Image (cartoon, rainbow over all chains, first blue to last red; front, side):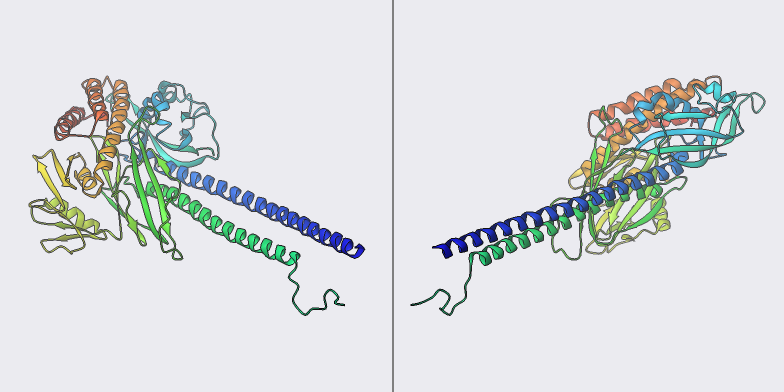
Length: 178
Length: 331
């Protein structure tokens, strides 16, 4: 009887050891899975950010040839940004925010130098009182830039008939935040 | 008297049984999780590839060129799901949706679920509903001006699709352009097209028949449907014709309505720009505003031949008014 009792206690101990061992193994696998998924998720985030950056970079390079901003009314510079259209575009920002997958778009005049200020109206830009035209968004983030030629209509050129004046500028594009 | 354990035999205790059972369960769980992880990894890859293809299509679009032909290489057998959503209040330019499904070499069947759809609002892809490629997708990019530049049209087909254009009755300009581009899987034949190709003809009957109506517009007849198109004001005016030839009919209608929406908002921009040019040349603002109003009518339904004819007339009216301002054109 005593021997049966001892054997029974030993058996139960072994079962309990097995149970604890299984719990420990499951916890170990759970921690391994946690580490794996956190690394994978970080990888997916960085891939998504990288693709967003590539998209913004491609867009920055092509901004001068988009129909909304490209200069179509002069054969002198088919790869220029039309600042007259840009100021007209400024009034349609809410609609155009959804055309490109970007959070921020700004045109900056680099040369000739002018006041470092955001333009509120076209006449400020013409009078060199500002050099930045923000078209979409307000806060730049991980911005991609590309040099472009900017064209603005100057009515005083060509003996008062008006003509296009060309300047050096930059396009600043920020991808959509994830 | 017999003692326990004296008998010869193998003691298969409860402990052993339990350990075997649990071990088998753990192994089965590990194999199941491994398979799920493989599927998740493939899902992630397909989602990334769809976005990557969309990004790749940006430099593939035309800038100053009349047309551009590019090739996109893929590693595994790939299906590209091309879908179009019409303009809405939230997305006034509509949406281009791209998703991918791949079949790696270690799988014999396609997965039921493809990767996540990537959405773009400034791309217009014309293709069959689900082109399937073994290794290459081909992209023809053509500019579209109505009459000002609206966008580039991206026409896409795969290495499993062959198209044969019968030269009889074709405009020589079309043949010259196609020969110059020298595109893969597009054949120009006087007669005798390959048996596995989709035939395109300008006279007589074939898989895809193109019929011109005057010098302004035409219709592409395919899949028992008629897809109207107009001739644009580009040096090669046949961009919409190519789009109608290569595209799924429903997608063509959707994409054209998206293009009309884009042209409408561009017209509004040009009318604002024209106001700042008011001192130079005749007033052109009402012409752009009228054109924008007309383009808005395409939101109500699929384009018809009559609408295309009217569109062409309006478009040429805008062009003539702009050309008349030789010293300060608006576009």
